[in-house]
Image 1 (cartoon, one colour):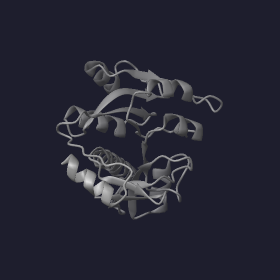
Image 2: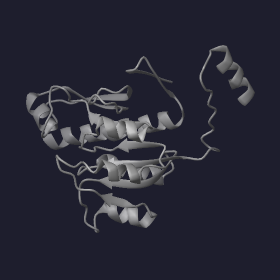
Image 3: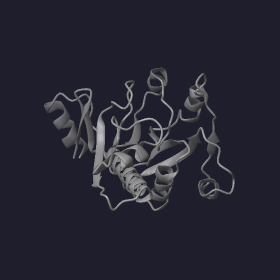
Image 4: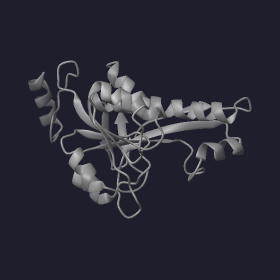
Length: 225
């Protein structure tokens, strides 16, 4: 197989040829960054536990304190996954400390991490970073976007998972999902549908990435097969 791929890489002048067999190769080491909202983080942890995500989670980093009796902390302690709470301010995003914690990871996942990573952090880390956000941007942004969208009577909501770039929320898109909402939805069901989309979209993006099915090209585009 390696010889065949080598011939293909030479034929197309490729800079490298990668053969990966997920069932046999070591799993990707990742760190997960999250803020107060738990839904994406919890979904990733359970996906990892069930063997649905071909990754090893080295640690969870958050700018939000969680009590020892919360579901997330109990889960992490039970499985021996370190939790690092690094409170941030506008003047200090604790990026140097984060870099030290993630230096041996293959890529990072931002599971609703509500801090903007600087260009210096992105360049210093050097590996890919995958983010997830709701599909209500740019019309509804700032605080409580779901409430804004609900009150505006939108009929279609979505979620987008993408690579992080120095330009905010403008990296190459890996996965997008949409779902219809209607007058039958109250705010609670509206938010629940939005969060479910985010969880599904992020998990699918991570699986596609780990299976080498995401090919970036032309700076802002990807081929996902």
